[in-house]
Amino acid sequence: MATKKKRRRNPTPQGGKPLTAQQLKALKALHWYIRQYGCAPTQKELSDLLKLKSVQGCKNYLYALEKKGYIRRDAGAWRGIEILIHPTEADRRRRKILENQRRVKMLDRPHTLIERPSSDGVEGTDAS
Image (cartoon, rainbow, N blue to C red; front, side, top):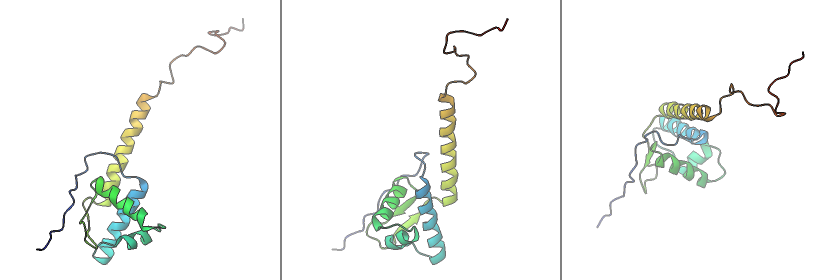
């Protein structure tokens, strides 16, 4: 009896954590390879393309990209990687999320124009 290949479920990204710069670089390299050669790279080819020392680093990138919903992988397929979100769109989302995080940090800072007492306890000094 033939066994069916299990297909991994992949949630769609909904504004969760943005891609790191290295994950975005891996997604762009994956997109370039597929456009250049017409098929997805093997993990070894992708690790060579990203100049990683081991294939495990490539596996970690692919796992993170899949978990965040940017790619889909077929379990057991040799070149079974499919890009779900274009790298340009991923970069746009990343920049938007990071900008929103910066705005929140700016709102959390104490206002610099609030008058604070001086360290010596004297409000002000008159020269007269």
